[in-house]
Length: 238
Image (cartoon, rainbow, N blue to C red; front, side):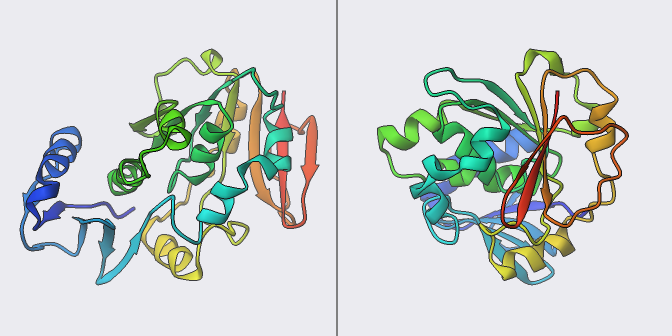
């Protein structure tokens, strides 16, 4: 798995943000890149790897359509047993770019996003910082916690969460990503470990796994419910 080696910051207006990430993730700040893998801070932050780059803005396309229509996420709402006015606590163990996690927060849920890759964590945090200052977004941001850790070794008590959520990363079902993002991330994130069976061996209240429609399950347990969509299914273990 690749991960960033430095934070590039050329604009004074972003230096405090750069210092925050530098202190939190123990990554040096430079004005020009010395490595082939770094975060570049600007109005539209970029993750750069081998001279290719992606940005992550929650209020821009291709994700903006999901943000505008978050109440129409019917399958996702069924999977987490959503009830308006009755928020749940969700442990998103495969945060990635943080997009499903933000949808959960917009739906009023408390979300702890866990991501092992520091570069991805910064992309999530910077995307949250760049959301417009509206109550709509501020309320969602206040429900989100981002943790940089290996989900399989996480010391949090999983039974403190109502939902454990897993989306094995960056497969073709993710329509909130462009083909450029998918290509970049499949190179950047060398995901060899499927966390599903690891979490099925642990105690949980409700475990939700997002899978492509044609995925052939090799889970050690049989799901209790499958919510079927056009291109994806949600496998629910209770």
